Length: 633
Image (cartoon, rainbow, N blue to C red; front, side, top):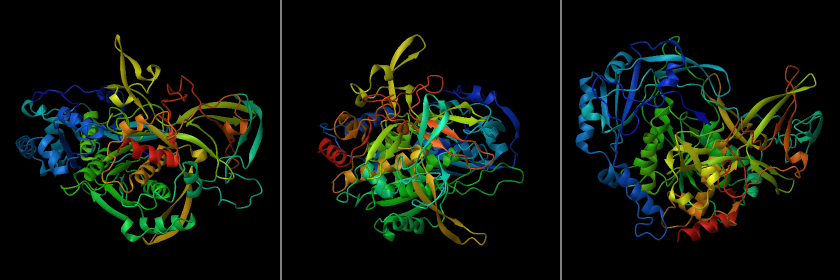
């Protein structure tokens, strides 16, 4: 899972006068940070000023084409037709472009779908144009480590004559921050490899361990899995060889280009006894602009070396017949790069989007981009018949990307797969980690998938009657509102029950090295797993499912889903926690207790029916595929 860096923007509907700051939601957070210095005035930035489409009209159309029984059901628009019908006017785009040029910015360009106008210039010119200061701030990342981010110090200002046409601005964040990848760990050993003291298991509860003193009443736990194989994860969710996603194209959006991705995919298929991918099944393209090398002394994050590989391999495990389009977002600002990659799929060649399913294994935290910018992308996708899938994130709570009502938010589970590929248990991924040191336990806190109830978006029609009031009602001021709940669906995401994936790294001469494996997980694993199963269901159909949420919720409570339930006291101890052996003399042992619902750590729950850990549940193979096809005749 990638977490994008801090960047502020203009909220939808804000009005501004020249020289006056625009009110925003994230400015107080930035003002509370410690300034580490300003960016060099000569640092080149490429900004994107996002234009406001007819969001109300587009959303009404998106609802119609996604609702079975409506006259417009599955009568999607082409990218060009969407722009012509709902996009900003050419005159508004040109006016914005003229202003950016007049402010001294260069390489001014209106995007193909008129979604934004981009421009480039030194930081000093950008700061002057938008009346902000761009600083570097000291913060802690999602793992509590010190980090530097780059952000504007206040909300942007644009001329009053343009403010009504602007959704927000991206690109002011500059250098990309470090990504959080706590869900990936090197494989302790190959499955089946003998070891004097096992560190992991080939299947759930192959190895267990008793421990003392007790932690939260538990004295026995199963060792984490060494990484499930493709065969194990396929069996758990009932993937068949009749429906493999053949004829479907799934887009994977990334911010880093992997090394030798097609060879990696071939190695993964071979090691997992899957059919070898054909060269025509994988294509990689780039969107946006390239990022120049950082100036001396500038903060620059190390590349994540296995995010794209995990996405591709997880998708291939579930849909080995589908075509994959990997879109690498360019630019120095991670928010901008990822949003641009997501949008590039939708604009396609103008006549057709590039894929009918888009898997986004990343998140942008609340307040870091204007939420209406994400909303505009998701509404366009629904109108064009593209299903947009977002990981709900690897920390409790909501994000700007998963809470939009036109996105399919994918949560995470803890999944036990037995010796015969049987489903031993599945519960919400919310692990309370206890650390044992000198005979005393310390409760370190809860880690798990994202979810919760939005305070921005009202409850969509498809959630009515499915999401209970206890999970859809929130207090906003003096009133109780019924709002959008997250996630919508889920799949395996717990690092203790992760997937064994692989990657290839380049050596010192730049040549690809050997295929190496590691255990990978997170909701960024769950997202492509779900996308692959939907591609399987879409196989052979004349029209794509597109925005699939209305269909998913129609199937809630049926055999199409495994209802993910909370862990109870009657559950065997070895299925309630994972025992984590010490990795070395300086490392202590630990325990992850499953399905922790500590109110001080998370407001999310796992419950019968819909819940804010796993949505309506996890797919149930053939019943899931048949249910989707029946719900969308």
